[in-house]
Amino acid sequence: MFTRSVHRILVRPVCIASRRTVGTLEGNPSIYIIPDDRSINSHVLSLLSHSPPNRELAVGTTTQLPPTPDSFTENHRFLDILQSVIAEHAQGDRNVISQAKAMASTSGSSLGSGGAFFPGQRQKRRGGTPYGGGGGTGGDGAGGASSQGGAGGGGIGGYIHVYDERHPPDFGRIPDPEDIFGSLEVDGEGNFVDGHGRYQRSGSYRVVTRDGFLGLSPFLRQKLVDRLKIEDANLRNS
Image 1 (cartoon, rainbow, N blue to C red):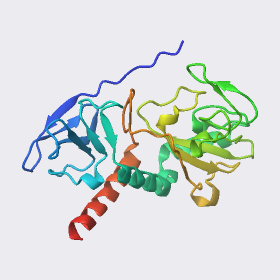
Image 2 (cartoon, rainbow, N blue to C red):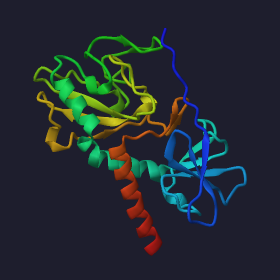
Image 3 (spheres, helix red, strand yellow):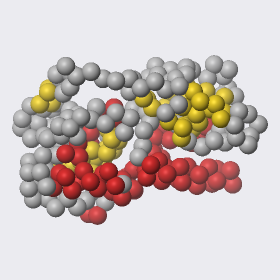
Image 4 (cartoon, rainbow, N blue to C red):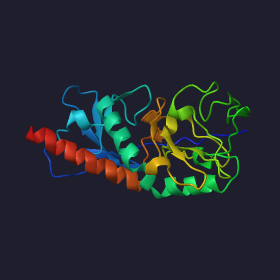
């Protein structure tokens, strides 16, 4: 029986050159915890350390630390920026490239989605939930990018999922729907179709789950921080 390990997200205080002392999430030091001016019972979570924070670019707010799915409120503008960065740069991420090459070398599988998947067959997830022939996270082929598994490999090609690294799937398994950012299309030689993979956003991704908070690879995290700094400068100068 599969047993899921739950990450403890603790608060680690740090000092920065600002009017206030902020903290970071233990185990996720790239996420800053900043007091919320609008509520004494809320904190702003951000990849930028500015205090006061730019709420338009924050990941979101939480009424509880560590944040939980119930206490956290997502910032939809941040999610749009996150998805834009992934669409532009995911094909340059070392882990994503490795998954694409692995899929191409394995006939009839889509390893980038975390495991083998054959259209028309049904699989069971960790908890026994069946998957249908539609793809990685759905049972009926619906659900956008997160539900595309693709045949892949052996000169066929298919789809790989770009997923949150807070809870990597076991070998031969598909990531949880709430961990999937989106999907990239790969040809039979492991190359990204049209050079960029025709990224398709998943509609099921969640910033915080019982497994933890947003977890990007170092490469994608830096690309996201760089974009947020540009957006921040534009807002301050507007």
